[in-house]
Length: 136
Image (tube, rainbow, N blue to C red; front, side, top):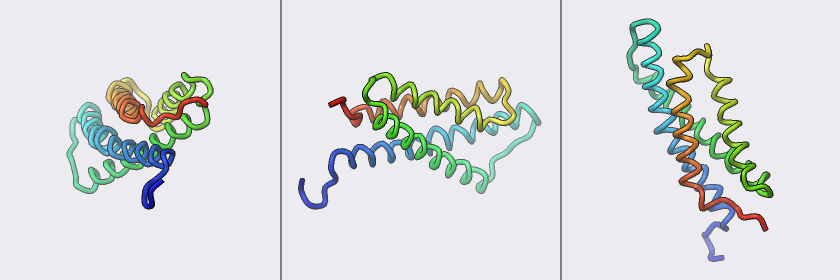
């Protein structure tokens, strides 16, 4: 290994984390902000964007995306003996965290937010597929 280069496991971890953060900002942050606006419009008839609110939601998308990347990394590391297990664990945890965070839980929020989580999870798995560790 050359000086200044990360080993393959560290590269995989960093790439998965960065992909999670980037997709979190775009899909969960920006998409979540749009979904929140639609919920406000549908429930109160009013709604708007504020810079502070938007920055908060986009930052939370970044944090949520990082958490999603860490969940995927942990699942791929700890459950690699049975190939479907990492994906199953990743999706179950994403769903559980999403359902826990949607309050109040109603059809409108499910319709608006579950597709965002599905897009985030699907893109994260697709973009980081090459970093999964094969069973040795």
